[in-house]
Picture 1 (cartoon, protein in one colour):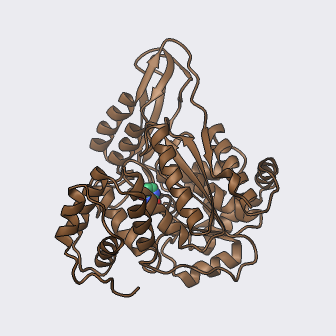
Picture 2 (cartoon, helix red, strand yellow):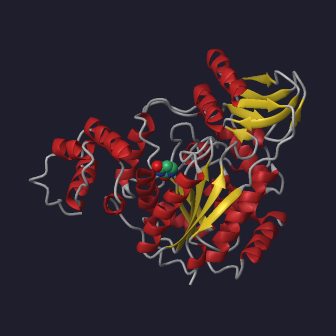
Picture 3 (cartoon, helix red, strand yellow):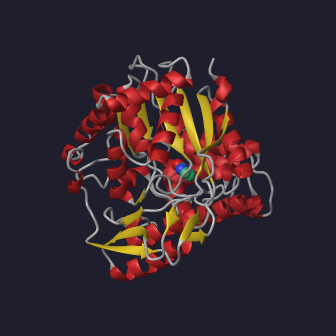
Length: 447
Ligand code: URA
């Protein structure tokens, strides 16, 4: 990208203008993005701007300019060499949200190309790359050339941002993670859409989370984020659908990197928790539908079910793991995945029914165990995490375990155990869990 016409633009003024609630020009936004990528604007100035943007908000025009500047901070892939439709899915982030690990191999097993560029854990939410790296040897830092080779060989590949793909998001994402600047629908939109639109895909299914474990806590906030992203995708000529799905309790039972890989292997093999299976099938159905592999969503779902039943989906995961340097033996023997040295149960303080699980608190407990980052340079402990035994609506007796923690550090486990205990609310009457899918936006857009 050529130098922005920014010789007259001063970074401190751009920060002050946003702090004061003024609308920035496209040139000012490009100045920040490119200045950061080139190392000319230090992280502390970008962090200050991110906080101003979070508090003051960005207009539609600013969001579009930010998304585009971040997209153009790197390369936009051309995957025209693949005849099949290129489709992807991206989640806005949740707790126990491991559907990417299931969908990439599942949809590739159905004949579509899934070039998935994912992120790391952000705040209390888990990240696909951190989960994949818990598979011994698995490499997420492939070159774009190797990415294409893996796509050619097995139809799916899952990598992190390379230096070439949306490098601005890589920088901004890492800063947002540790500066309290995640929960902005405009920053989330720019972050996700810059990465996804750089993939050269034909269609994108967005999983926009809402509830106590999501960045967008209310349905209204989630809907406005979904609208922004569908709009950004369609403006750039990519068919984009957003499903607003529930994150008021963790998805599935496992929270934590290697534990989630284990649960994904179960789901690809036809088992695993019902909510995880249902959401994965629904998202796969949309991917097949938008990728013209299925005329209707019902057909898409049937196709996905068949690929799981026949073992093709799991086989595809094994293939991808091997091609990316990982140990494919984890498929048959998940004991090869790292596991915390110790385990401790979190007992229920009383008998009754689980009324609520404060989902962000469970995610934070996992971060405290070492499964996420509190500072940018922190490394992840892939082995630790939480397995829930009770979910909303389940009956429980006093003293029965609500969850089990897998841990390596006893002092961290003590703190995390308190958090998990606090996250559960027990009542004396049965309640039903909220629906898994709240709303679909942009679904009528398939030409
Ligand atoms: N996922 C992303 O890739 N970016 C965000 O900002 C939030 C979730």
